[in-house]
Image (cartoon, rainbow, N blue to C red):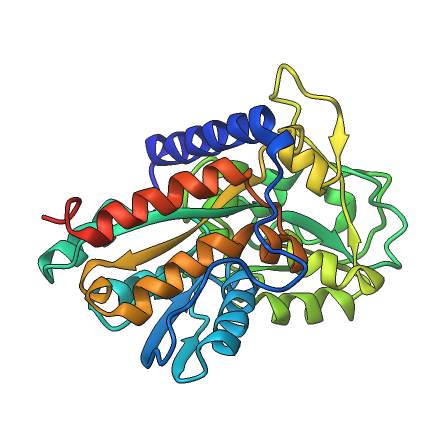
Length: 335
């Protein structure tokens, strides 16, 4: 992802966040006490293939679970191969929807175009990438973006091996790193935001596109430091410790900030806040089960995203995304 692309992604987030602040009073809860919002046609059948980001996976799987209850004869399969892996399958026409924790790259969009696949990008929630350590780590009270860069930049490989190389007062002990795999949108976003260049980091760390693997690693290693989506931290708070991040390059910075529903929404948790997406294959919209699933997703994403630990958008923004999809599905946006 180029600097322009991250700037564009940050601009997207800023626009969505601005709407969140302006429209927050509207709420984002589309789910009633009686159950999920939106109706599903009776006797709906078929199958839906979804793959991609492990960060977006909990939201999509929660939606899929609710949808299966409404349409038991539709088989919804949700895989995890990272945003990059999902886009590879998506551009080949192997899946109907792609979960993504970043925007599609130009080369990925070109690959889809070569296979005569058009698509629509739909925003579904916000996330705050969370830096974590083991609960027994009693020395890291907060960390700066510059220190994270010192740890993760390519030049650190084979050189930055101990905690006291980051701060002299930290212990003379090994630092064990856990982070997103290179096919992950989380990896793209983190490296761009922290190192300054997408896909640019040291390679000597434990990497996985599955955030549960990273949670397991950090939670069992007192010398560990890692990063992944906020929902995975929230679900495992009892065995992880989140580290406040200080963006010293932000003129409006407020010191070290912990990720939370509030700090992601108000923009103070910088620079590791981001929007989350699903992408829909144009060819898949010819099938009613896919159209109904996506509409169901947007009707219920606010409630379900929050239930699994993410930050919902305002109701008005979900309505805008639904209108965008309906226009796309109707064929007026397809070429």
